[in-house]
Each structure stands twice: as C-alpha cells, then as structure tokens.
Image: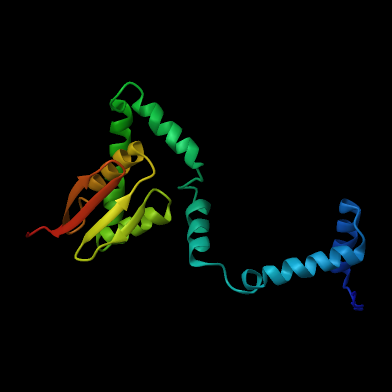
Length: 182
C-alpha cells in the first residue's frame, strides 16, 4: 500500500534530488523513500553530537601526529622486523626513542598505567580488563604486538609515580601497578 505525500523542496534539496535521479537512474519517489529510510535508520547519529571516540580520533588524525594503519600492515611490519628471530636492533632503537619521547608526554597526561592501557585499547593495540588494585589483564592480537607494546608500555611509563610488574603469557599479559615505595 502506498501513501501519497506532497513535499515542498528548496533549491538545494531540489538540486540534490535531481542530481541523485540523474546519477542513479531511479525515480524521485524511490529516492525520497530510500532517503527517508536511511534518515530514520541513522536518526540518532544525524541529530546528536559525534561520539567522544569519534572526536578523539578526529583530533589525533587532524594534528598530523597520527595516521590510520590497517591492522594487517601493522602485523606485516612487525613480523618483518622479527624476520630471522630477534627484532632488528635498529628498529628496537628507533622504537625505544619513540617510547622515551612518550614517557615525557605521559608524565602529565596519565595518572596511572590503567589510564594509559585504556588509551592504548582505544587506539586498537590491545584489549584490557581492570582486575582491581592496579592489576590489569591485557590481551594482544599477536606475539609480535605483545612484545612491541609491552616494551612501549615499560619505557613510556618510567615517569609515572608507579612501578610495573609485567608477566607475559603467549598473547595475554598481566600488568600490575605498584607504588614506587612497595
């Protein structure tokens, strides 16, 4: 059963409708039906402010300091660095410089390692579960990422007011945060 609706279009909406009709070869009624269905399905996203995650991704990418990297490229890159056994020493040295730089940044940015782990989970490097009392279960997608990220975590948290105990499994890691006085 179809229902008739009469709609007044402003110039922009009319131009958009005509453009879509020309590009798709579909009739105006079909395009309006599909547009309404799409709008209804995405109403919440269209009418609310972007999620905090989306805003954070935007800030990271627009600064030019970060890039999107397909996870397969990350795995391939790290596996290449591992080719022949241990990671290439030049790669380790460069990664350590990046970690050391981040230690200075993280000194004022994060209160504790839990905040850092949540940030790294947001960035897609790991999954973290807070077990309470400064103990975190961390799951990595591969052994090479586990090595890379635990080394990064160790080196980039040196300026935080806590010490870390790291126990590595195959893909899981337990990270315990202890005050420097313990």
